[in-house]
Image (cartoon, rainbow, N blue to C red; front, side, top):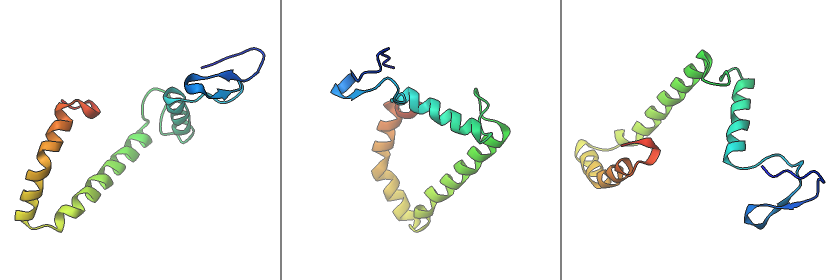
Length: 103
């Protein structure tokens, strides 16, 4: 975070300028703001999901799984097998590449 006692604009990474009273920006500030929103909704206790937060996450995961399966239901068994064969090299490259922490 850039701080400056004079409250004058200062040079930031990438050439942009901001005042020291502007809210912090960047991934860490975004994560902190998101955590505070979850705390305000009683979904996060500051360190981990609350029971309500865990239940909401489970519902979202269930709905995501159901939505992801819908297109597969429109395919015949042969079509689904063919599609899986076509995308398997991509999914393998993603998982072997460590994306999303998968290995």
